[in-house]
Length: 266
Ligand code: URA
Image (cartoon, rainbow, N blue to C red; front, side, top):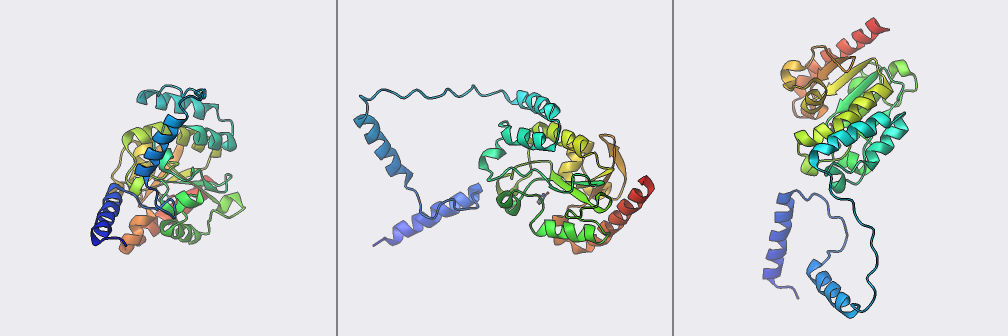
């Protein structure tokens, strides 16, 4: 029978892991890594007369600053969206990839006139491999539906296309770092070139920092800007709107401004 002491130590260990950012139990049964190490040591001793298998050598780690250069090269070489998806999937420069279940590329109609850019996948998006499908995403869908637009709409004039600055979920949904943003920016810029929307909608501070080079969403929202050859509407993130429903009024004004701009550009 387990002692009360074991129970308390196990609980303390679990709390400590949660504190460090662990959010999911990967397996149903806990793994005792101390025993694993002992077994491995025994096995290595017993089989020390066997020839050492030849392992493929791992390439030396690329210095941090090269990740951006590599991303630029890989993004520029992507001739279409499928090639870009594959290039991002193959990119090993970003540590976030190692903790993620899926690469989250995009959703919606690639012929859309509006391209929405969010920050990074959350838990639901990481599991499903699609952007904006959790509570914030459902609100985003409702917001665009209110102006007759949606991600599942086949008509390009009413369609939206959705992606994020980051293709992988940051642990505990922390903000992506400046380095992480820098190495994903070439992919995002190429993504915008390939989709070629009429305008961009930036949801929150991270895409504003990435595309416009500055943040301060509460001041920026609702004001047209321009970058990467596109008109840009910064908006407050739907997750913020869930926490601050009073701000939906301003978001509605921003959606009407987008609708009017699309009419002007048509
Ligand atoms: N928040 C984002 O910015 N993007 C998502 O895909 C989900 C939540």
